[in-house]
Length: 261
Image (cartoon, rainbow, N blue to C red):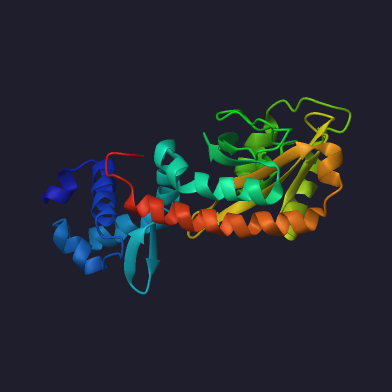
């Protein structure tokens, strides 16, 4: 009886994940089998199961950590280093738009909360407290994230009670799904008096390579002032900063201290 046959299945999968985590560029099947002292047929079977669950990816005969594992790593990342790499971009966005800007994040499977906020030096300053939950049917930042999630994630988000926060809040799940589809087409989401009748907001997705959208940038301000601006122009500015934030997060994740996140 081989050592492999004595190990519980979960332990075998975990050892493969730990190995691939140490080789970001990936490993060939023969290398994985040799390093873990596994029969090649066993390694191939285990990797096939893991590939089906998006735990590993296969490209050009090389196995690497899959998107699902990388998303988990980002979702559990410590916010201290995220603040260090993202806050300068938020501050620049707030200065350019003269509006309060914030970063939101997907967590717990289908919930969205604010992470960071920067406000401009103006007489009127909005506040988006870190850790504040963002309504999936009303908040622009939540729409900008959830629109790009798998159907089961959207189902879970919209299965929760959807309170009517103002007269402009949509609580019909079918219409909300249609709005998500529009967000995917146009690249940004809006919240026009849907949470507070005197406030409006725009949200844009932050696309991370191999991970999809688990962050978004938001801009909020008085409804009349925001509506007086060209929303498409404002969204284009936010999208430019979303690209900067995506690069900052990617670089920060690979270089963060080993004991964080």
